[in-house]
Length: 637
Image (tube, rainbow, N blue to C red; front, side):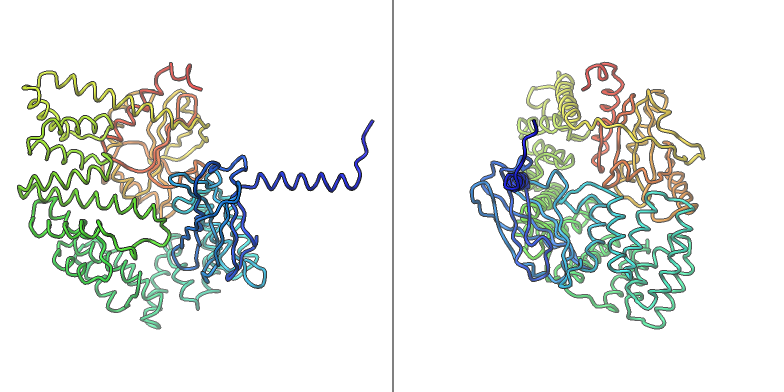
C-alpha cells in the first residue's frame, strides 16, 4: 500500500531537504549578485562534508577582486566563528571590480573548493553584469585561475563566457579577441588564420576610431601575416596623434624588439622622456631600465637610477651586483651594491607588495629574494678574501632557501672548507646530496672535507654512493607519491621532418612529451639537458622523447619556419612536433611542461618548469628506470 503524503508533510520534507542542502554548502556570499557599494557577507560552513578547514582554529577569507585595466586586488578578511559557521563582511568599494574570486586560508592550509575557486560576477545598478565581467571569468577558466587561486581549465566554459559577454555587450571587441585566442590554441593552422583574418578586418573597421581597440588588434594583424597593414596603421597613428595610445605602444614595441643592449636602454630612456609615466607604471619602467642598463654594462647609470627611485627594491640591487660579481669585476663596488640589497630586503618596503599578494606570499617572496642577494653578497665577499663574512652571509642564504638552491649549497660548503670547518662542510654537503641538490663542485668540496676529517679520501666513493642512493630513493618516493595515473590523449601531429607521429602507435614504449615554445626562456634553458638525455637514450627502442611546439605567437608557415630555424641554429636533434591544441587538452598551465607516458599509454608523471640540468637529468633517468621495469606494471595500482 502506498502511503499518502499530506501537503504539510511535503512542506516539512522540502524544508528538510533545504536544510540538508544548506549544511552541505561550504561557502556563500550575500547578496548573490553583488554590486559596487554593497556590503558583502561571506559565510564558510566548516561542518560541510567537503569543507577542507573543518578543524581550523582561525580562518581568513581571501577575496581577489579582478579589475578592469588594472592588476587584481586581494582582500584578506579575518572571520569570526559561531558554532561551525565562520562569517565576515566587507564593502565592495573598488569601482573597477568585475569579478570576485573567493577562497579560505588557515595557516598553510587553503580551501579553494578542490582547486576550483568560488567566483562571483559583479553586477551593475541595472541588474546586468558589468562590462568585462564575463570576459574576466573566461580568462580565469581559460588559464586555470590566477596565481594561487586555482580553477579547472575549461575552454568550453571560456567560450560560453565570451558568448555571454558579447550577448550583453555586442560592441565588446575584447570578447572576439578572446575567441581568437582560444581558436588559435585549439586549432592552429591555415583555416583558423583565414577565419581570424576575415573577422579582424571587419572588427578593425568598426573600432578604428578607438585607439585602445587598435592597440589590441594590431598584434593580430601581424599574427595572421598582415605585418605591412599593421605598420601602415602605426605610421598613420604616429602622424595624426604622435602622443596617443597607438604611438606610445609603437614606441614600446621598438624597445622590446631591439636586441642591442645599448640601443635598447637608450630607446627606453627616450620613451620615458617622451611619454612620462606615473605611479606603479613609472616604477615598473624604471626597474626595466635598470635591467637594460645593466645588460649594456652601464652599471653606474643603473645604480644612480636605483638610488633616485622613490621605491627601492633590494632585488634590483642584487641583479645589478651579480653581473659584476659573477665575472669577478669591480668587486668592491658590486659588493657595496649587494649590501644595499641585503639591507633593503631585511626590512622590505610594504608599499612594494603586489596588490594581489597575500601577506604570507609577500613574506615568502622576500625571504627568497633575500636568500638570493645574500648569495650574491657572500660570493663577492669570498672573492675579496673576506671568507668569515662570506660564511655568515651564506649561512643565512642556505637557511632562507632551505637547502633547495644547488649553487648556494655549493658556495656555502666551499666557504666552510676554506674556513677550515670541515665537519660542518661534510654535514651540509651530505644533506645537499641526499636532497638531490648538489653539483659537481659541491661533490669536490665534500671530498676535500672528507679527506681532512678522515685523514685521507679513502672510502669517499662508497660514502658518496650511499648518499646518492639515499637521494635517488627519496626522489623515487616523491615521484611515486605524485603519480597521475590518467590515460594519455591520443594525437596525430606533424613533425619538423614532415612525418606524422601518432601517439597510440607508440604503445609499448615510454614516451616523454615536452611542451615548449621558441619565445619561452625556461624552455630554452632546459633544452641542453633534454638533448643530453636524448643522446643517451636515442638508440633505446623502448624510449621516445618528443618536443611539442605550442603557443607560438605566429601561425602557419611563419610558425613552422621560426621553429625550424631555432632547432637548426641550436643543433638540436630530438624529434619536434607541431602541437595542434593538445596543450589545452592535456591541461597545461605553463611551459615547459613534461608528461611521461608509460608502456600502457597512461600518464604517470608530470614536471612543470625548469630547474637545474643535473636534477632534470636525474629525474628523467629515474622516470625511465621506473617505467621500463616490468615489476612496475604488476605492482602498480
